[in-house]
Each structure stands twice: as structure tokens, then as C-alpha cells.
Length: 171
Image (cartoon, rainbow, N blue to C red):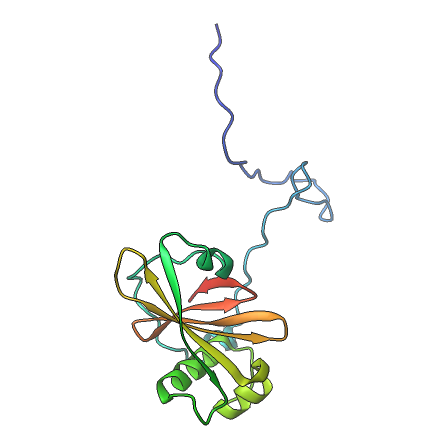
């Protein structure tokens, strides 16, 4: 009697056939395709100065801000909302500019320029992210560019993740 081997729970990717045409879709038969891998930044961008990167200590963050806000293990609390450079505390301004430099999307180099030309309404929301069981909180600077939620998450004062279109991307 032959033993039945259970089917794997996750699909296993197979190498394409040697003579397969380049234009052929690599999507599974069910019509769903795998996420495209992230593309590395060009060498010039890699050599640009970066914000300090936090050690991997603290709670694991989910993949998206939606998952973060619905988390059963992490608690998000609103701390403040700052509009414009005049009232923004220097520590928040410094973190915002460090994140902007690390992200590399905006060409603005001044706080006023970033708030006027990159961030909708010059409004930055400051939130804390802490384990519900207790522990050290991360700081989340959350803002919008058009209809896109973006921001930066700092752990221990150093940049830990960049939020782009609700996706949390560790640095």
C-alpha cells in the first residue's frame, strides 16, 4: 500500500523551464500573483547619509498601519498634532527631517519647505506605539501626502521604519 504524502501548505516556486518564453506570466493558475520583490536603491542613493538606525529591540511591527491600528498586542496612542514649523518642538522637527532624508523622496532640505511642499497642510501627528503588556514605546510621526498615508517610526530615538502608502518598511 502506498502512503499518501500531504500536499504542502504553501506553494513551492519552481524554476521556469529553460525554453519558456520571457513574456509568459509567472502567476499561478489561480490567477493570483506573488508580490514583486522590492527593488534595491541605486548605488548613488545608497551612499547618501542616513539617519541612525535603531537596534532590533522592542515589539515586532506588523506589515501595515491598518494591522498596527487593529493590533491586539500593540497599543497606539495619539500624543499631539503639530501644524507648521513655528509650534513644532525641535525634537519632533529633527526626527521628521531625519526621516525625510532617509526616505529620499522629497528634495526639500528645510523644515518649512517639507511642511509646505511635501506634507498636506503641514500637519504631523505624533503617536506612541507600545506593547499592551508594557514596555518601551516607539514614536510614530504620521502624515499625508495627497491621499497617501506616510510617516516614520522611531525606536529609542533612531529611525526604525518608514511608512509608505500604509506599508511599514523596516530600515
